[in-house]
Amino acid sequence: MLRITLPLPKDVTPAPTTSRVAIIGGGFTGASLARLLAVNGQYGPDDIVVFESRAGLGGGLAYGTRNPSLRLNVAAHRMRAVPGDPQAFVHWLSASGRLDLDPDAVGDGGIYARRADFAAFMAEQIQPFLDRGSVRHVRERAERICRRHGRWQIEGDRGASVQSDIVVIATGHPPPTPPDLLSDSLGGDARLISDPLPSGALQAIGPDDKVLVVGAGLTALDALGVLRAKGHCAEVTLLSRTGQLPQPQASGDFAPHGDFLIGVPNTALSLLERVRFALEEVTEAGLPWQSVFDALRHQGQAIWQALPLVEQRRVLRHLRRRFEAHRFRMSPQIAELVERERAAGRLRSRAGRIVAVRPGHAEIVVDIATKPHGIVVRHAARWIIAATGPDHGNVIGSQSCLADMEGSGLLRKDPHGLGIACDEDSRAVARDGYPVEDLFIAGPLARGAFGELTGVPEIAAQAERIVQQVLAMRFATTRTITIRSL
Image (tube, rainbow, N blue to C red):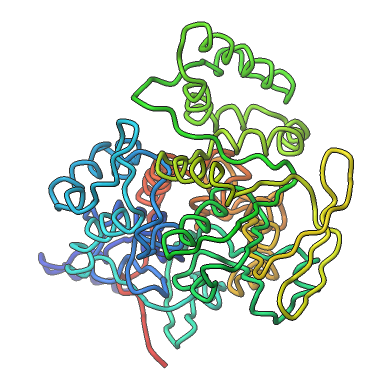
């Protein structure tokens, strides 16, 4: 047999190997991932695609509000959103002139900016890459994600179709769901507001209408702030199982106190004992107790991952509410509002649970079994606001694309019901217990694996780790992602 080898032209090179990414969700987590991938410079046009139904990237549900009464509950210098430049947001506030336009931002020695300002900052960070085409924003909600011919197929709710090599789920917290008793008794009644955060959600509440807020966390206090900012002056009652409100931030700047990584506690009880000891230390030293909880936050992922599954469950069952009241603290502006409203008798908090709901023509009557003795008291209000937070137990069912993937065995809930199961590399864990190499879970949906993963610095650090893993992956495919509108 005659064999002839023809030389290749000198200008012919092998087809490029690329790792193309579709990011589902364009809030802070998704925008951070897209930006970090684009900064690397290894991607061509349309190689990074972000599915996000909102007009802009970077804000999401948490920050994408225009209401000036909604502020960050963390000082701006602690919003370390850009790896390698921890003071980027603080510098931007001054350089952009936003701080000059918001004199009320300064409180207790820190800057507590409006959430809309942080969203604008993030939008400005990602915009150059959108302009260059290295990041493409598909303004649709991802409806279906499936495997097809060895790649991922993502279909949007308005006809877009994307094929990609890697998918990152970064949809953030699931939407809230009112307690069953409220939904069953007030289904279809406009006086039950199931989510107070969207713009205009509280607009119909009159200035003299009494309000019952079910929940007493930061979302409930956001609702209070929005109501008072629009002229509401009637009584507001906050109802929760413990009756405990978030604690205030400490004034001034201080370092975290406590090293929980030396002999990492491996039981819920030993963790509680270590925290109590650290609190005694800071009290004797005249330091704020908040310094201990800041140390817990910084070391939280290592602490959580050192706990066996059964001890993680004990932490969630016995310590979670107490921890969250001290971890997720009020901004000075909200703390001042709460103190003023309580002093005026317009704000009350009650510990208990709802046992009956009777809608009337003028008001809704609610029976509350109060703590600690279970005595039932009757409470009447014109409006009920559900502020119980995201429905993490229904995170997969709340999004059709995630439900499809669960049905195909590609992902599953985490054992604690906090989000989606993933491994320590943020890879989704499939039904068979093995990680899916090219499917990542980013942001709060990965809390079951990491514990502390709701703050901006922690999410930014996880995004950086995911990007490093993505950059290390190589796929021998062409560089063009197919995007078509039907």
